[in-house]
Length: 384
Image 1 (tube, rainbow, N blue to C red):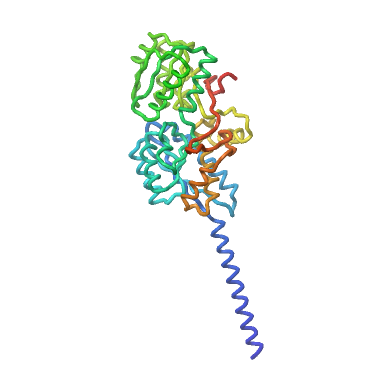
Image 2 (cartoon, rainbow, N blue to C red; image 1 turned 30 degrees about the horizontal axis):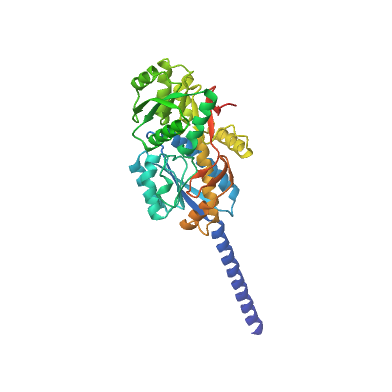
């Protein structure tokens, strides 16, 4: 009888030990399997589709690298892609879905500033962090303390572009051409105008167009008659390609350079405009030729996977995922939006493909811009 009781108690002890062991390992498995959902609102259709596809590829590459490195025990990212269709209304729908249905930790996007000016307000009100990766118009981060961006504003990039053009090309008088129905292109125009005035350059003429326009010959003919030293353009890539191609068909010589803003920063410029794109000068936040080991690795990996060189939009998207991941990793939980926001605000001196990256006190990007020129069908650093 005593032996039987001892056996029973030993059996109970074993069961308790096993139960405790399983409980510990179950808890560990839950912790090890922690996931963070990121909403990704990109323009896969509409006027900005040329940028959205590059952004999606940049994100997917970064997510796959991060999840592979995390292994079985690390924090994994779950990307949820949706098309903002290049419109504020669809961007609003996508943000509402991310926040209310998908319960994301953070939102990256949307592609256009026009959309961000509306959709970001929804995230701000809900207290969900947003990281803009291509919004360069003024007023985006002023929406609220949950809104950040890793894209340099036009007010940072453009003055540097004009300074370089004045010094190296001896530009003194210019004509301005810009899209007047989009927040991004209007912000570019305002930044260009201020930079030109600050640099003491003469603006001979100003012309406008709208998204979707295909014939720019009336504006370019008038510009040609003014005999400018350069044509300064703020446009999305589809219109930019048409402007560049038609300018050369109208015999505006390549000795009169076309200087573009952030919307020109896409391989589609060279693809669509062909030979006419040679010599176009573009202010940028990044260039493929950066010598950093991190950037070389990114360019090689992107090119190998997608069969094309990355552009600035892909690079900003790729960097954005790593920036977001660092902030989410520092939060107690992927559901703690306030902690993620606070961690983003503390990012200073982070090594990224964009360079040494920090957020300003106003949650804008802080790193060094570059000036590019199209040479042999590719963007290269101007003056090198």
